[in-house]
Image 1 (spheres, rainbow, N blue to C red):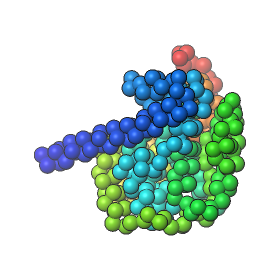
Image 2 (tube, rainbow, N blue to C red):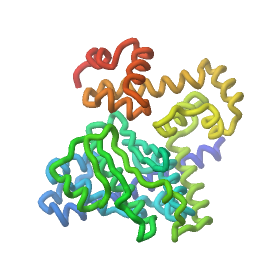
Image 3 (cartoon, one colour):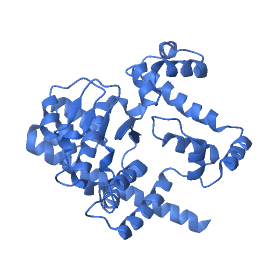
Length: 338
C-alpha cells in the first residue's frame, strides 16, 4: 500500500509538471501572436491570473481573431508528452486515437468525440457546462488544433480542401480569417461544432512513426490518466467510461466491460450488487448533463439533443421529461436566473 501511494504521488507530480509545461507552451504562443498582431494588448496576453480560455475570451473581445491565430501558431510538440506520443504513432488513425483517449491530460473544459459516419471521420468538442461561456474560443481552439495536427501528420499533397468545419454560432466579424488561414469548407450556425475529413486518410502512415517510443509514451500517458481519473468503485468507473463513448450512439455494455477487463455478465452482477443497472447509469449520466445544459439558458434544446447524441430533438425532449418529470422549458423556468 505504501508503494502504491508513493507511485500515485509521483504520478500526480508528473501530471502537474506536464500540465504546467503545456500551459506554459500555449501561453508563450499566445504572447507571440499578440505581440505580432495586437501589440497594444501585450500586457493582458501575459496575465497569469486568468486560466487560458478565460484569457482567450477576454483577448478575443478586444482583438477579434486572436484565438484563431493562436490555434494556428501551435505545433504538435506544444502538447509535450502527448505530442511525442502522437508523432510516434504508426498512422493517422492511431494518432487521432491517442488524442481522443488522452485529451484529459491537456484540457478539462471539454471532451473530444471521435465518430465514424459513412466514410467520414468526425471530431467534435463536448464543452462542459461550466465552460459554456467560452464555447466560441474553445471551438476555435479545437478546430484550429486539429487542423494543425492534420497538416503536420498528412502528406504534403493531401487535398486539405476536403476538410469540412462547422461552428455552432454565427459567423464572427473576423470570419474571413478562418477561410484565409484554413482552405476548407467552413459553415456557421450549425447544430454542433465539428471538423470532418475523409476516413480514407486514416490509414496513411506517419514518417515520424517509432513503435518503441510510442509504447513508452503511451504507458506514461496511461499512468498519468489514471491519476486524473482514479477508480472509486464500479459505478463511478462505468460513469466515466460512458462519458468517453462517442456521442452519436448509446454506449454498449460489452464495450464498457471490455475496458474494465471483465465479462458483460460479471459487470452486470457487480452493478446489481451496487444497486444499479448499466442502463440506469447511462440515463443518469445523460440526463445529468442535460439538466446542466438546460439550466444554462443559452443552449437551445436542439443543440442539447445534438450534444448528447440524440438523433432527433423530440427523442431528447421525451427522455428529459420522463427522467426529470418536466419538459426542458419547464425545468429551465424553475431554475434561478444566473
